[in-house]
Image (cartoon, rainbow, N blue to C red; front, side, top):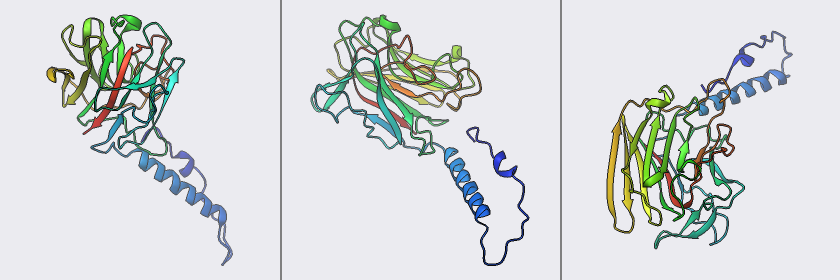
Length: 289
C-alpha cells in the first residue's frame, strides 16, 4: 500500500450529534468526501504497472543544436527533464532516425535525462514488478571514450547497487564491454544477474542498438551493429523475483528516478561519480510485459 496510513481516518471519534431535520451536517459531509478521496488515491497507488507500458525517448522534438527534447512518446505517464551543468544537445541521427541526443564530451561537465513517475498517475510506470521487460538504446560512443572515464558509461539505470531497492541497468565499460544488470529488492547486490558481452563488442565511433531483456530468471543482452545489421546475444541466468522500488526506512529512503546517460544519487541528484555517458543516445526505451 505504498506506506500510506489510514489511522487519521479511523482514529477520529464518531460524531453522535443530532442534526435538525433539513439542515445537512457540512462537517461530516466534508469529512466523508475527504476519506473517499484518500481511498481513491490509495487504490490508484496500488495499481500494478499495465502490461504493454512503454517509455520511449526519441529525442526528435527539438531543432538541431538545441537542448535535447525529453518528450516521452511511450504510453507510460512520466515526467522528465535534463539535469546537470553540462549540455545535452540535439544532433542528426543515422538516416531514417530523425535526431538524437549528444551527451557531454569526455572530461567536461555532467548532464543526463532524469525520469520520474507523475504523482497524479498513481502508477509506477518505471517498475516492471514480476513481469518480463526490455530496456536499452541506440548508442555511439565518442572516439575519445575509453570506457574508464568517470567509471564507465551508463546508458539507462534505475536503482543503485548501494541502495535498498531493485535495480536494472545498461552500461558500457572499458574495452567495449556492455552489461545488462537486473536485481530484485530482496537479492544482495553481489547476486545481481548480469549478462555481459565480450571485449571490443561496442567500440567507439560505431552505431549500435543495445537491448536488455529480463525473461523469468534470465537476463539477455542483444547487440546489433547498425552498419552491418549483425546481431549477437549473450545471456545469464540466476534468481530474479519481483522488482520493487518502494524504499524502506533509512538513509536511502527515496524512490529512485530512472536516468538516461548517467547515474543519479538515491535522492535524484547527479552522483559525484556520475558514470557519464560520452557520445550519442537515441531511442532510449523501456518496455514492460
